[in-house]
Length: 627
Image (cartoon, rainbow, N blue to C red):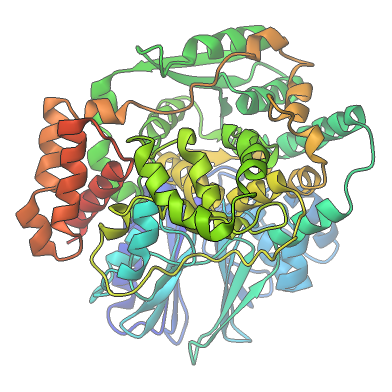
């Protein structure tokens, strides 16, 4: 895993600026760095390397194809590189054992579309075709690896880290205030948008081709998760539950086997949850020795699962490492967050995710995780109530539901951060099951009038419309899962894991996002995934072959921290009140100072904690850091 950057038709100090971009993402690739500049100085490519496969200089980037026609910079891992290489070796004498060389030669031989269809992995890459005079950017199917692009002073720019774009000479792209509604409702800015004007995120499953001479762009979708879900649910798995469970175990085992390939030490995150325990169980089945596993704990029983993780590790026989963190450890991470993420991002579990990554990096360079299990196998508690709530409230005429929803939310209490308020979003949904997850997402947060007023702006936000038509999947839980896989998972979960892990130069891999696993998951009937009380039924069935059921059947505590409690402590409260100072906010001219003050005083004087408090603080801290 690495970091990439590039400049097309940049006016000014070309080498100096591509070097600055490289230096800004040193944490993504501390082992080596390289620069390519075309003979006509129209294309500059930068790369920082975290060496994982082929640690020699033979795998260094930018990488030039054997013919000399294509030059690539690449961030990620191609897990089926060895398989692809067998075919390519018939015509090419390989100079390295790196997956980078396999990827660039596959694209040159097969073309971009066929190559992208063949590869399995996580990636963000750019390839310069000297003959066609094009640069093509591509991002992996689900969105594990980031890739930003846009226009700065008339030049086309791209990078793995938005901070690399910010450091360019003459950068003056202002804040994109159109996305603030989305940010203050969700805590993240979804692709294709970014916090800056004219800077975008390439969406998962797409590639973008740029003409070097004209800078005209053409964007192509090579993978559609929406299509995968549609095909899966209209041609469902026909076998029994037991047959499905055995097939899932086979697919996960194959995925994990491919993702355990590395020339550096490798391990896995282990919580007490179903997802990571399943991944570790299958890793230990495959591994010739003890798998390295890592857990962090807290001295607070409400948030601590380290005791249970240690019990699971002992049962599986892993080489387990745990670290108990203090409040001071967690609080010390907060000042680092703006640099890590480069734009406002406010999932507070970013703090423990950073800490477990930091501890893990002290021992290994690559760590597998269990992310994706909830979204693919119907695990979130909120899914449990989808059918029940919809069946209950859909009988109320839509105009009445829409009218009463705001009042209902305000009447049921103060905490709009979690599952207890899920019913409210369905009041504003026109349809479910035979309906649109996008409608649910769009209306979910239009219930607290204060949230809609945080940012000062003229127009409404441009929501990320998922374009899911009525009666698309015909089953409410699958539509909710598809919504989360299209939006929440890539824009929150994967961003959080990538940025925090790469901040400490740790590569993370997510076996459940393997193409074959995702395809299979969306082909399963809902009764294989969930019943009235239990989610992830099929994943549990796989796990219980390795870990006793009684070890796993306990309430999930989640990977979280008591941020609302800490914000009332003297040191963090002083930090927060400094960022939320009315005069400062008025002078900035972006947020409504009176609304921010109201939200804060509701919390400090009445105990009403809104998750948007953390969202505002993360925005303000980022703003002060960047401006």
